[in-house]
Image (cartoon, rainbow, N blue to C red; front, side):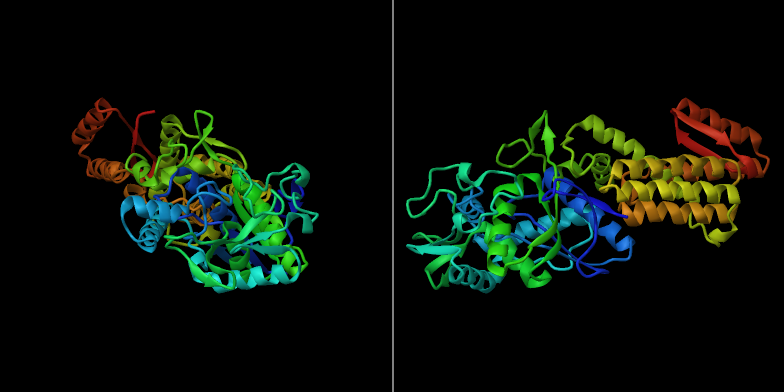
Length: 478
């Protein structure tokens, strides 16, 4: 039984969807005003594994992840400039041109990481009518008030405000880092709709004049549009618990009178020397720059070595370790080849070991997506798989190993194992060819040439082993 840590209950809870086998999953997407960085990768790899594991378990998941292209202000609350408009002005382009460019960039990076694309990627700018209707509903129910072209949510009208973050509403300052706006009745209140000042490009006509939606409002409107009034799982970064997700709950439940989200999941951040990685702090590493040094599957494996709720400290040393681990996966998968044949022909002893690996893997995944534990089971499989091949594994053994490796490592953890394209830079293919060439020399009794090849390879820092059945294996020296 899958257990997930629900931020709302502050404990691991058994996952039971509202209408099984259907599951509604909503994850807060990026604000597209720059290239994605490693912090984005940690978040979206984490929720990608959740999606894969749910579908592996037979659930029919509708996955919605928004694109924020308007309304996210520079103070992450109710004040400052729109991040899209500000960056567009700096780059001297239209805001939607900028949003389009970085949206494409975002999906390029996510595709490289083998992240399954959402079923629906709604844009905030494309759902203004739904957001206006939600504001009108909140006004009708007394949860909001209009003031000089702005519309605010009244926190006082929703006594449960603070239940997600655990904050005392009486001690809050509306989730802002600036002084209270003069037209607010209460400093805790947050903007649902903002009046567009003169010269503001991103604006729409509304019952309250020309303006644009508040950042919190967007996710409520889009999740309701595609997943209904109650969502099974809502995910996002830990930094979004307050005020973003707290405000989503208030406006959604205030409008509909029922539970907005049943399970709240939050991933922790990437840190650099103990400090959060982020664009505003200037200590971020873009994925495009990172991919020039470490192939995307290596970056994905590096992320999966940590728990999604734990911080991940960035270091080249950790990424180099992930590179070595990934090369072990690639090496085994290449040795297995196409592995044609029926896995039913595998030996009883190997079958028993594989069942143990799959059990350990599933137990880790069901324990709040413990990917570190799942990787441990996967590399136990790699160790025993190489041993089986060294001892002359049958075709049935090979088929079973390939199927299990592809299932655990590929289908669930999303790790590509294609060799050169996956980061081996062609070395794995070259070593395989050398091993095959040496085996052919020995088969034709050209022992002097075979011994000369061994000597030159070992002098170059490689190990050479002759295996049962006449196969030769060449590996980097330990």
